[in-house]
Image (cartoon, rainbow, N blue to C red; front, side, top):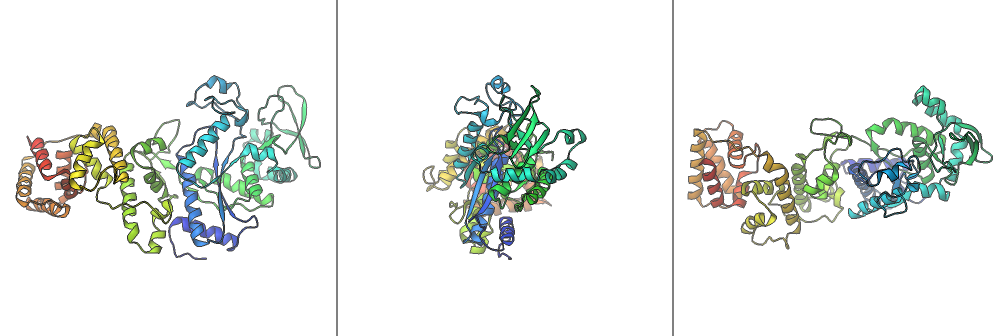
Length: 516
């Protein structure tokens, strides 16, 4: 089919419909999946994958409302704990349980039955806080309850074919010891990476040598007695659950290809996949937890609303993005601009708007007027110590606006003050005006006093006219002088809007102060 809509979530939804030939799958719904490794706490990648997948799911509901869908947030909590995270308490406790499944490792926070259960609860609380519609599934529960048993026996049956796919992807040393099955030792509870001595398809068991005692141990591959190596596990899960769509980062391209081949061997079909680009830091380098470069989700949400982050994630996911603090104001203002335009758009334009993919058909209202960048510049001009300072200017500019009547604006005010304190104020670098610039500033002051202009457009024209009158060949130089001399920064707001909000008298006083 060919959709009327062009935004990428609709393109992805079309892929799903085309694969299903427009029909509901036999299981009764389309299954979207996102994966989570609960050895750490939820992070930006978790949010991004669930957010983007939800956008595709929403697009599918528009194109094929007769086809139900579900989103599964799957936790790989049967994985062994490979290393102790550095951002949790009681690290000695965790160190004593290395290589055990995360759901058998004690909770270092002391609030849940296991470390896996603690992080799973954090994941669900995290997703619930942002209103995602999902079903949580635990790897431990699926393995132990028998949900995966039929497909696990298929893995045992197709062992040789799977090994033929996997072995060429491994180094020589790894090839000698590799097995798709990872037995969970009944003696120590650890997930073992050991070669298999034998397999019995009829009994559904494998045999291995205990690495510590040397004993031969026979164990079922079903019921949670073994788990699978993750690439095989990924394929097994697709087949067992009937996953129709799952996206992943570009670092997993080869893994997706291998898992897709294994899924076919198991009699299934790989899900439709979107490979998204990874985030870069300010210098264009890949973001790394160990390096500490880039920006975390918690840091973004300290300075801007979650919707601005969701909008940033919405933008072309197959293109690498630089993720650092300076992108926050721009992303926030672009989100607000789309929000302001939404009510006046045609139904087709609305569906292709980022606003629809973030909020559906009933987004919050935003009447525009005050951008986030403008609030930041207001905070910079008046050296705002708290939100009440900014509200003093806003209430004069728009008497009807109060923190109570404009909660979204009030939230932005709080973010603006925080961002100003942490980033703008430390970076301020004022410069003195040249004689030529002083003459232009004095002319601007005289015209402002004489004109009695108060609306943003009239003030913008007045500032523009002064620049022209003083022979600025490039008016960017004129506005740049205003930003650098008055605000101590290389870029700034639309000056007419800023003067209207700040107030003409206050702006004149600011010029007097900076020219003194």
